[in-house]
Image (cartoon, rainbow, N blue to C red; front, side, top):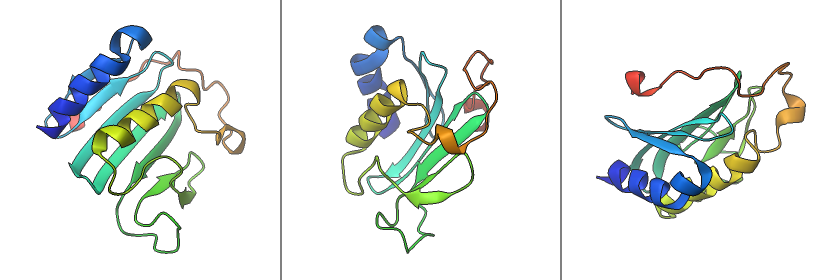
Length: 138
């Protein structure tokens, strides 16, 4: 039910105004943004989630796997395009899932790599490349 509610909220908030499309998968939702970002959101619980996105050849994600205890935002953390794991600057543990998803989409619409572009050598990273659906693997 949670993914269906998120899909409806995304469509109502971003759909028409931002040309955002949302696909409901078996255990996730896939969001396609007009700037070429392909976002896959999986939320098991309020404090257990993974949000993975691609923009051209770059990939990033935020998740709550309890692996990086030294980070100030433990357990949530950010994986950058160059392979670093950093404190998560976007989501908040305990926040409503819609709040975290909305905040991430708002940032991705204007800054697909959240400001980490300069550390990632990407050549032609513009989203003119076709994106394949992650729902087939979801």
